[in-house]
Image (cartoon, rainbow, N blue to C red):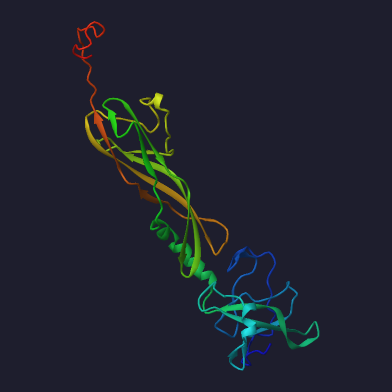
Length: 285
């Protein structure tokens, strides 16, 4: 494969990947290598290298070019180079005095160079991820009420949230982001002037024969009328970049569910003197 003749070489000092470095981001996730500014250029790259004793010199040429024309048969082998800004594929070449390799020899894999450090892009994502999280269309859940749409004054009315963890995909600074949102708190407003209640559980349904029992999320209305029950759900989350590992989002987001109206009625008990067996048409029969 022919290569662009304009080359940028590294200094004679060996470029090596130190062992024991902490994991760092790459376009494919996390690796032990780190992006470096290629000396003598304004490009950032994952420079090939060996151990601490590796004395190879490295330089790169633009990949898939032949006499300044694109070599079409080369393109399927070139990487996408989408980890940072202005990425482009390159062919690395090396030589080594200790190995007796004086001529520049192509490395067996293509690489990428970037106008800025891709790690900086990921740091920018970390700075913006909470704001992005809070603006996602996360579903706060559905409000369920037992009994509904009517309940009785002075009785326990069971309310609970029907909500699940959610996975959402978005794009930030040109990178693919996957966010996992998990509900962690449920704040109920019963619309009757009582204080809102924040709970760590969503509550749950009761069988019909147990309606009226007190539950952690139930509420007793003291006056008749129509009330709009509302729910605000707080979510925590994690995010991953380009299929990398899940990283906790530093903060939470709150999302509001559609309110549900409940009508509170008063029960009336009357005493009647008629015996309905004797007088089926009597009052109350």
